[in-house]
Length: 153
Image (cartoon, rainbow, N blue to C red; front, top):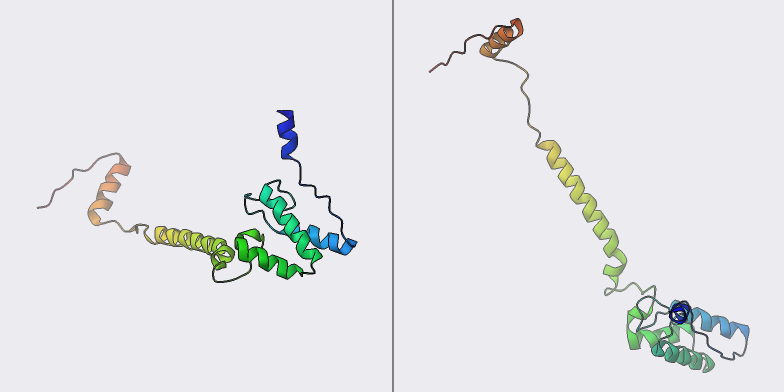
């Protein structure tokens, strides 16, 4: 059990040789900002899945071949879709992802405001005036004598 728990916190370690510190930095930036296609919420740098290991190798080969960061990202997006990006580009396909939470928040606030407005508007109005018959009856109750109630036809 201890071995299983220890392996969960482990990140993938790649022993790769780079021409300079700038190449290593580009590699680390790319692998930490791209998501593993198999894993739910792990970057390529964190994932120990075989596909993540293969993609780290592909990124290394592309860096060595002189590809730019954008070309590498475009290659992975073309192959695996926008899912591999933690921050997908704003397109018609991702507009719901970017603006959906805000739209839901505004719709919920609007619904609450509408409910409150309807409840305030539906309060029954109370008439403050009493009829002559009600005043006469009230006076009798306050004197302690219940007057007889007349039923008019």
